Length: 216
Image 1 (cartoon, rainbow, N blue to C red):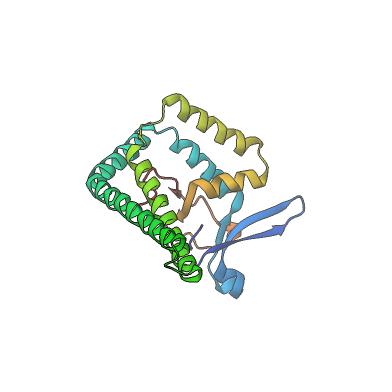
Image 2 (image 1 turned 120 degrees about the horizontal axis):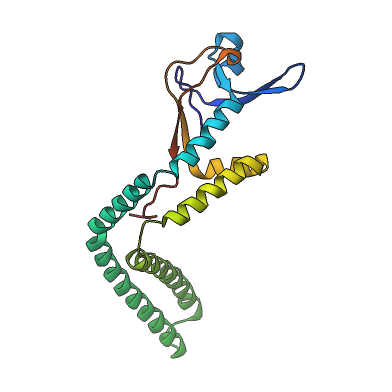
């Protein structure tokens, strides 16, 4: 998720062992490959804490969430006519395809079409019919499902749940939460010195779970 601000390579997890404990870093791939000739890295514990706090802070900003919902509603309104037209076309194709299947089955029952030819054609039409019905259901759900801003209580509960996972969860649980909510981590500035001397990177998080339609 981390891109080196100097060379564009991804960061990878590394560690060293001191006298008292193990020290974790996120280090540019170039340093892993070329040694001290490559770029630097950053303290992993410091970055993890910054990301966790950024997520909790994000869910403290209800104005951002309200703005995201408003943007989705505007996008949905712009595409409403197009979805209605596609739904009408898909519904018509479903009717036509089902009628074609019925004609083939009738022809087979009347003995005017052999089993092999009928079987192949009916199977192809059945696959097409299933695809059309799936698309019809998607369009119907997009049209019928209302979108509203989550209540302040729901946002508070989510924020509390995140804090609980970060404070008491397993490393795997914390990793899963971050991978679900964060698309990318960008480091501001040119902090490309050795990992051992890196300072606060000024982390920004890009949230992956923005509110929006699954298909346009």
